[in-house]
Image 1 (cartoon, rainbow, N blue to C red):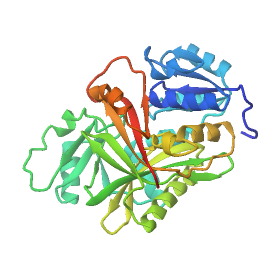
Image 2 (image 1 turned 90 degrees about the horizontal axis):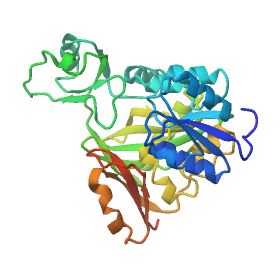
Image 3 (image 1 turned 45 degrees about the vertical axis):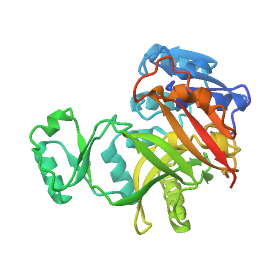
Length: 359
């Protein structure tokens, strides 16, 4: 993209969840229209987008309509079909690039890419049978995390094995769906952190402060800024994120998750080629949120300053935790965002809030 999109241009968004919703809201602030394509009729993004196309991601007629309406396309989650993004990219810009999406959709391909780019990860092996699992666990001293290579999120599609726990491995591969799997070694990490980073068409890069993440039942519970890490570790995660962006020739915002080891060294856990749950704090504690930063990047605008003006803790509201909203709104210095989802379900992210404190 040689020039920035003019005000009034339309950005296409594949996916209509809460991330698409917040992208559409950020685009509107910058004077852009949005068209969202999503299979779900009750898509949260449909409530705020200018146009909503309710169709499957591979619906040819819907994709033709999307192409006719927008000047650039992005996506809000990594399970959009790569083939769809490649087809669209032949006719107009698609960011982040489809190659990044394809790598992130397969945990094995992701780990291989990271290692080839000089980025450290936990040791891993491919698993396509119970015998592969046995071999991998022997290699990792009996411990490891078995994951589906594709489509897993929020702890789904995972099984943990620990040394000394007697268990038969017969039938595990079938129980996991008989799909391609990856076994990752358990690493003795002290904490989990992540960073949100952005890159433009001309290679300009911006990285937000690292955050410390805590999970419950495999779902992100809270992100705390600043993270309890030293300056050297902070610089290491920032540099790793910048290196990943460069290696992918990336455009847009990316989320990168890390394990921090006892010696302060870091291992990349996974990458997300999109705006990220652990970056929601930026809408409350920074002048430029991750959502605006992404819109700026994909539309050819200069990146904004990622500096935070406050320390903060962001917490997700999962399931019926959303019923706490009236009580939360009594607190000073609290920013609440509800996603407009019509049905409360266990494990479903319904919103989030961020408590601000002075730096």
